[in-house]
Length: 141
Image (cartoon, rainbow, N blue to C red; front, top):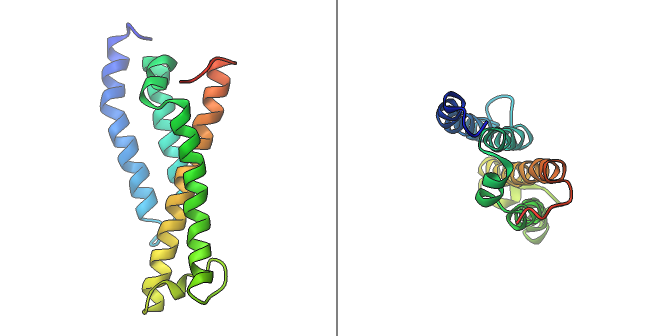
């Protein structure tokens, strides 16, 4: 695939729009279907598409294995931190209404950050599984 010019050009045109759609799904979750899980899968699909066109080695240079591990733990940490912040501020775990003086704004803030954590975790988990299968025992760094 590295020598197929048409596929490389199409990939360069499509990948930014795929990522833009992922961000739309992420940020539109409050108003319609979608959210962190769907956005994370779309982000991972865009990066896997890049890998199919340009090769796994190029993808490992773009997103090394250590970055995926940091993203995976960072996404879980964001999710857990929002829950713990609710406890610290006097509510229950993942009680978003205590995150602001206005309960509605607190709900929006809490849901937004939880969905960001889910998107980061899902996309990095999908990429980690892809690297495990694509590299078969090689080091992705």
